[in-house]
Length: 107
Image 1 (spheres, rainbow, N blue to C red):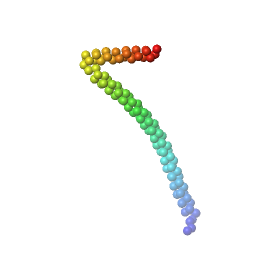
Image 2 (cartoon, rainbow, N blue to C red):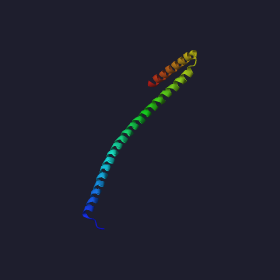
Image 3 (tube, rainbow, N blue to C red):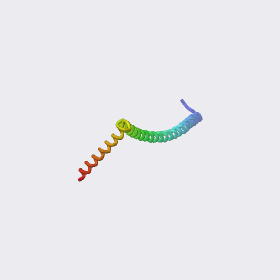
Image 4 (tube, rainbow, N blue to C red):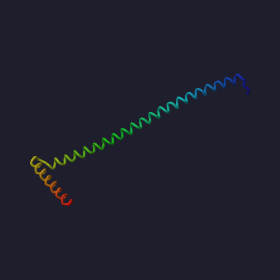
């Protein structure tokens, strides 16, 4: 097969155009990749922040729930108004006894 110089020039020109087109497309893909990587990094950061916030809120919720249970228990122990007074007196008495024990241990 023998090509004429003008035919080779035409083929070379087409190949050059194809290569130029591929280079442009490749550059656009690289640019898009960089944008997506930056967006991915930002989303990962947002996710980490959100997960930390969830953990904090779960800890707060557990704390509030524990306090709620303690209050329910205290209220059930106190019972009626008369029972509450008796219970408060008993608790105060126990606290005084504990304070006395601590004082004796400190000597």
